[in-house]
Figure 1: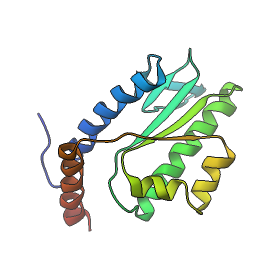
Figure 2: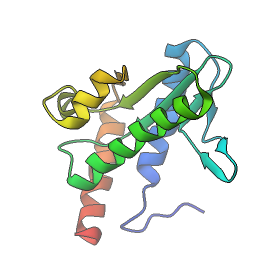
Figure 3: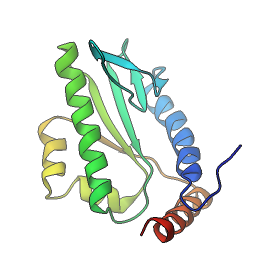
Length: 150
């Protein structure tokens, strides 16, 4: 059953499925989605896209527009997840943050400590262009969620 309540993230989840398929084609290798990756005894992460064979970890951020503090923290957590994976496995991975909006891209390439972390740790930013319909769907969902979560 699809949750269509005001706080539902169904639209973002639908966009993430589309984005994941697009990224898999772009990477040219198969990836697992939301797989549990064991880091140590009792500790695991669940990246959005992951390939142990090809040493790839991707996090998808299907947000449209200016980021609020909580959304910046989500990106920081995604970066930390990627770096912890590398440290735990003692190997280098191709680390990618996948986005769908020019304002988010500008922020991630800007002058913040998050942007500098992305540069310093060699994390790629890959922007996926969404259809007008999907862009509107996400924007409308975000407006609906703001009303309930404000």
